[in-house]
Amino acid sequence: MKNKLLTISKIGLLAFTILVSQACQEDYEMVDPPMITDYDDDLDEEVVLQKGLESYFVTQFGEGDMDGTSWDQAMDVAGFRKLLSGSIDLSKSTIYMSQGKYVMSETGGLGVIIRKDIKAIKGGYSLLSEGTDLTNRRIDTYKTVISGDVNGNNQADSGDCGLLLVKGGIIGIEGVTFQYGYLSNNDAKSNECGSGIYINGNVNSTSVELTDCIIRDCKTEAVNGQGGVAGGTAILIASGSSKLNNVKFLDNAADSRGGAIRCNSNKAVVFMNNCLITGNSVRELFGVGIQISSGHICMNNTTIVGNPGKGAALNGGGSFMLANSTIVGHDIDQEYGAFRCETSIDGDTKFINNLLISENSTAPSFILNGANKEAYSMGYNLYQRVNNFTMDVSDTAYPTLVNGNLTEEGVYKWNIDQIGQVGGYATKQAVINAVKSFNPAASPMVNLGEVFVEWMGEDAFGLDQRGVTRNPDKMQMGAYDAVLSN
Image 1 (cartoon, rainbow, N blue to C red):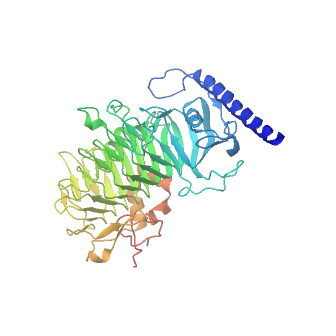
Image 2 (cartoon, one colour):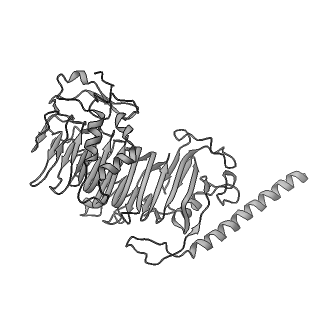
């Protein structure tokens, strides 16, 4: 009996301690001054950030006194939100997250606003982890979900919230799924309309780098009469950059312009390697997978396929560097096809060793749209039809639909034997040289192609999307390579 009474007493004391701890924490957070920022938003005061811990531990419901010092004292989702948005310096901190669902607001509307560097956020840890042990991690088994599902109905709709609004800082995120981000008609406005990850800060100090992540089932609805602003459902960049390595964009829906990704100014940059974009859609037009209205994108070993909508799978007036990638226009898009380009002559669009096809027999693989537009094929692309453009002599025309399919690995697998005579095959070095030559005048980063190669490393151009080593002297077009012999 005494043992039972002692146990009950400990539980009661623990509950009281947690309540007092939470109350004190909330009181402290309420008096936080504004964050320092180089970006001209709604804050104009400076603050000296408090030094953060080297490691923070987070579970969905929290543990112990929830100070984040270990798994046994893990923060809960409310503490996690405050950690991201508050005045603690996280530039040297890693946040470890266990499996669970972390909703980014208690109410519908915008998600968590971040204005600072965060060294790393890492998901995929088991709930059974103890102390500071980091060995029990499997991101596919122990799913960490940053969610907008406020109303708890497992879909993005009215009452839900957006996910992250990054208005400053260099942030690394690994092994996390972003899901059910949503913005309603009232919140989808031109300067804050991304329901997933929205990036708009000082171009030199604002970047989100995702590794081994998924962004899925997010939705953005437009303000009446302003459908053009409600795009980039998964990632919308107004100013800053996003570096995406092995990221999947699945089943996101936009009102228009960018079912998954959108750049909306010359201060916006996207790097992509080993990525998959499928199942995304737009209600109206343009960039069913990606829309670069203005800005710059570098892409390697990326597959864009199976995105239902009209206005091209990849579209925009910005600058494009495409290498070793597969772009497939959807069957319902009979006019614009795979890649619709409106790059001005002061921009820079180049593509090499890609598979550019359309499932619709009348749609182009590539269309250069409008007067005073410019693009360059650097060769070794396989295509079906082009409009207003002349391909390179080393490109291969194949008007018949390529027979291929999206595998469980997320790569569009096809057999080059069906093609017949090929105009030429790229070498690894030729691809690297072409990418390094990419240098849009309006880019906020000088020699953008070289920066992209440095980020990935040259070896990445000798692999396909699955990580299979290509023949460096005879590389198959697109993100899938069967390793062709000499």
